[in-house]
Image 1 (cartoon, rainbow, N blue to C red):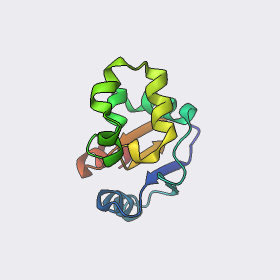
Image 2: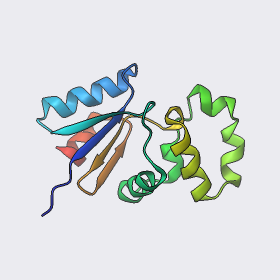
Image 3: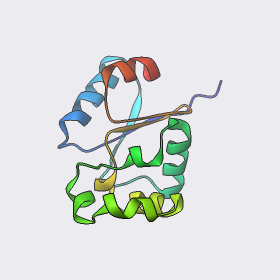
Image 4: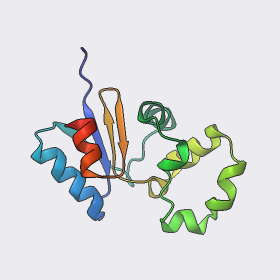
Length: 121
């Protein structure tokens, strides 16, 4: 089996991100850390994340975020193609639900300890 490096996309000011990072560290998982806001994933990486997560693309949007509300995306998203949604996510890390942990053919969005135990444990 080929092991792919695990990448943790988070935002340092986010308490949920800090909990996820602590869980990864406490469970001995080696990961590269990327600031989601400073360096959002590319559209290509996002497409791979979506495919490996098994989640609908709308689960990748930070629906409680200020930028999401300001851009009135609740109303706009249903009219956009998947490619347009991915391009939108790639354009602004604040639109992306965090944290995202990606690698080894798996992706999780957000942090729930039981999900991390199941996927990464």
